[in-house]
Length: 256
Image (cartoon, rainbow, N blue to C red; front, top):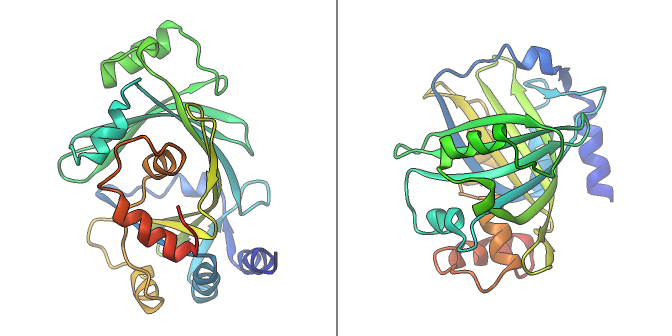
């Protein structure tokens, strides 16, 4: 509990930035890089960014709560696309921003150049209706309707969003990630692991990268869908992910 209290204290010391102000930050040539670390290092990072970064604030809260459900085929097509390193590849998910109670049906596509694009439509809830709008949206993007996919893995997590004063980059910091698998009924979490994603304009200088290097936090891929699927459904093909799971387990001081 002490570490969570310290995170709250450090966030309280960062200047707030609103969603409206965030919307003015347009990263036209965006690149995304993920890093995985621990809560202890998150505390150190929040200490180091004081006076350099804003923290996104919604109704006075700087920690947002997310609920996401991933959909896949009976044969786990989207999971296997990622496992097998196929590009372009896609994922279908329903994400709820719990603090504002807004939900979107989303399709994420990663192209051959490593760039990720996201398209979404607002939906009433996590329970997807088999209506024309949802069907057309999915058919156009993934060439499948709701009848051929189903909910597989759900996750919940907390998110902090930081923006540098120059407004050339954003960091999303996810922690307390919990999973529930609808196929196996198994629940799991990743303990103290923290997933950081840096979004910035092309090769523009990044003030956060020297800080991450100083903390020995290295770039590392982390798909919540794939990792959540692996640790809650051992019957899935996962040989490509096993070395990563071992590294993550060492960082989290547990077996994933």
